[in-house]
Every structure is written in structure tokens, then in C-alpha cells.
Image 1 (cartoon, rainbow, N blue to C red):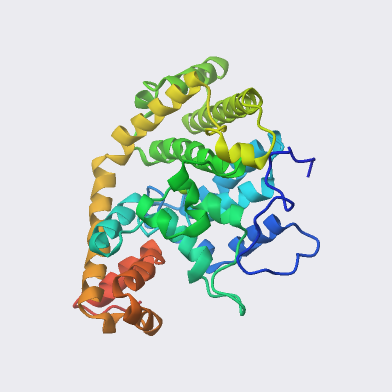
Image 2 (cartoon, rainbow, N blue to C red):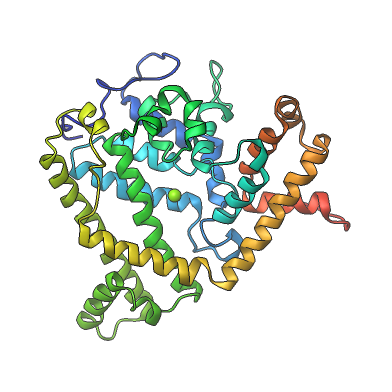
Length: 375
Ligand code: MG
């Protein structure tokens, strides 16, 4: 790795792990975090969790796993250009959705509604819970015992109530301070990845059309360029060529504007990063363009009646499961029954949040279907 900027997170300025461990051999602390995340059970389950399209709707749609890999790719590129810690940006990106429920956004909303009287459900906080507590892989501790900066990056948002209970990790939400630049990068790489792959998946599914997309300025510019340069190009390639150019434009703008921000603010140390406003940002013009793209997706894809039908089904599955387990915790698998003795609602939320889409559907069938269920 090239030399890091003085304001990058490094092993020298890291706040370290909750439980002290010997330094890793042949890899950095943040490589070790990344490796622990990849070997976790929660990471493998991302393969069968919805991004927008439910897994069985098609093999080529993004899942939370491929989404997380795309986020990591974008985050690494940006981090490298800015001489920041690539391994940390990658670790945060790969872990950012570990706590996501099945069925994407709809699942998260449903579980949050179920948990309304029991402290709520926030998927960022759940991702942290996975790496701090729920993974059972090490003899010496619960969770993955990741470095402070990785955990800080995973906790993108947090309510004030929850922040108060999180000690050092919650402080920045209460004192209006910023996380590392690597965390800021992972956050924006997440948006770049999903805005663009949702365009691609939306077009593939036929829920949005190229003509509709041409009403979005950021897409229109590139679509026009591609059509002009390659008038006979088949539509699939046209889409990929357009999406790839959009990603490149967003990433390039983000790098250039962030460099300007860092130098204008005179950022020299990680402490400067934490007390300054967010440094990783688009130029004003690009910020407006990417908002328009987001808005387009919200109206035309996320609120499409076919997506909403799937969401309604997903909400039904989650609230049915939550309701029946709350009514009778003896229906839970044994390991969750013992957790439920302590805090029934939280144990059920942990169980449901850990489910893949298809596991949730099967579990629903096993409990509610009267006909014989063979799987
Ligand atoms: Mg994400």
C-alpha cells in the first residue's frame, strides 16, 4: 500500500480492540478485521438477502452480498486515490449490511414496527450487534472483536437514545463529531453502488425503461454520449455503458471535491477529521444530480406496484413470525429460547434479522401452513 495521508486511520492512531489481542502476523489489523468479516456466518447469509428484488425473482439481480462487494470496490478505489486506509474502507463496506433483515427495506420497516415498544430496530445498530455480540466463532469473546474504527464505520446512523448506551462509539452522535474519512467514504460508496445497480436491475426487470431514465439529467448526459458514439449498440450494452460512466463520473467528482475540502479545511490529523464537517462530499452540482437520480428511483422503482406487492408480502411474513414468537417463545429454536428468557423481543428480533429471505418464507410456512411442509 502507498504511504497513507497523515489524517488516514492507521494502526498507529487506532483506538484498538475492546479485548486486546496479539498483533497479526503478515497482515495489518484492518486486514484482519476484513478477513474476520468475510469468514463470518452473517456475511455468507447476505447472499440470500434482498437488496430490492427478492432472491427468487432472478439470478442476476443484486443481493446484499453482491451489493456489499460493489460497495467495497468503490470504497477501495476512492480510499486509494485519497491515500486513505483501503483495508479499513473495505472492511466497513463488507460489514455495513450484516445486520440487515430479510426482504430489504420492507423487512427493516416491518421489524422496526414490531419492535416499537421494545427499543425499536435499526439495521446499522444490528450490524454492530452482529460483529460485537451475535457471531459465535471465537473461544475468547463474543462477536468478532473488531477495531474501534471498523465498528465506528459500521454504525452509520444511530438515534440519540441508543447512542447514549453505546459509550465511546455513541459519542459522535451526541457531540456532533464525524467518523474517519474511511467511514465517510464507505457511506457514500454505498449510495453510489445502490443508485447505479438499482438502475441496472430496474431496467433488467422491466420495471423502469430507458425512456424514463432519460428524464434524469445524470443518466441522460451519458446515455446521449453512448448513443452518439455507438448508434447501433444493443440495449443491454447501452445500459451497462451508461451505468459504468455514471459510476465513474460520481466517483471522480467525489474524489476531486473531497481533496479540495481536505486541503481547504487544513486537515492534518485524524482529530481534525473528527472535529471538522464531513470532508467526503460531492461538488454542489454533482450532489444535485445524484439527488435527482435517487428521487427518480424512489418514485419509479421503489414505489412500483410490483415492488410494493413483494414488500407487503415481506412485511406480512415478518410481522406474523414476530407475533407468534412473542405469543409463545417455545416455538423458537432452542438457542433463541434461552436468549428469550432474558429479553424476549430482542431475541426474536435477532433471530428474524438473521434470516435469509427464503429461510423466513420457509419458517413462515412451517409455522402457519396447514399442508405438509417438506423443507
Ligand atoms: Mg448498503
